[in-house]
Image 1 (cartoon, one colour):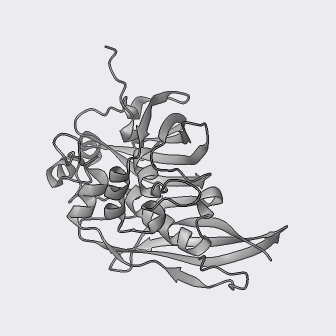
Image 2: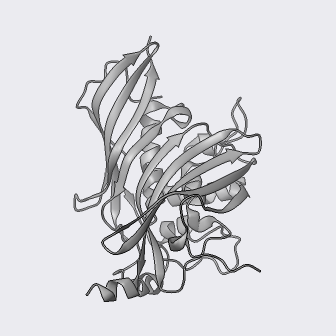
Amino acid sequence: MAEKKSAHLMGIGEEFEPLEFVVTPELNQQYLYAEEDFHPRYIEASGEGPPLVHPGILFNMSNNTRSPSFFLPPGWGEVHAAEETEFLNPATVGKKLRVTWKVIETLEKRGRPWHVLDIWIVDEEGVQIMRRKMTNTFASLNIEKKGE
Amino acid sequence: MAQIKQDTPIGTGFAGKPKKMSWERLWTFSGGPFTAQGWPKKNLHTDTEFARNLGLPTVGASATQYLGHMTELMIDLFGDEWLRHGKMSNVKFVKLVADGDELTSKAKVVSKEKEDRKIRYHLSISVVNQNGDDVLIGSATGWIPAT
């Protein structure tokens, strides 16, 4: 098995392994509790189809830490620093969603690595659901100690 | 029903309901699916020791959890259609959100313009904690139909 590359070392153009997942009614309702948002649009079917997926799931499942290939060495953490989000279409409960992540920018600031990811969520019919540009920095106790 | 109307003036402010970042909600959001073995998964959002090993004073809520709060406010303002056209831009997470913090999403109309059959609104957005400190700042765009 190939060794996983640490997220903070990935370069421009490199991609994390995509994630596919289905939002069940139970998973949706888990996030309704987490988000304290019990609007019926997320619970009841409407004339247009099944309940909608709560946006909190879309955000959380499209964090790159959800990729099967995400890896950081022990003692390292990723910090979400900035965000751009476009909502393109609602996702519905029961459909398979696919998330892709591509590194589009890397930089170093104050001795820390940073990257910007282009993230897409698309459903099983190819409908674009959400696009994000997520900016992350990486923290390690080793870096902080060197800076002391 | 969207709260923003054609005659909503520039400068109008809106706020969502305050939400407490309790351990239960942190774990439920960031601990993985309830069905996963060993739930909740230990990470910097769910486990104090894990967070301290990274040099944090305590756990920090996932920023996506309160991005979800902000999205709820945007849907309240623009209706379900926001999920087809809404944008959040220049969003920055400027302060750690710890367990027990109480967050409120806020938005203010900074400009509006008529485009064909739409009125597009530009908002400044923020999420503030119980001390009045910003934890998220940025901007958002959405539109309502013009009649």
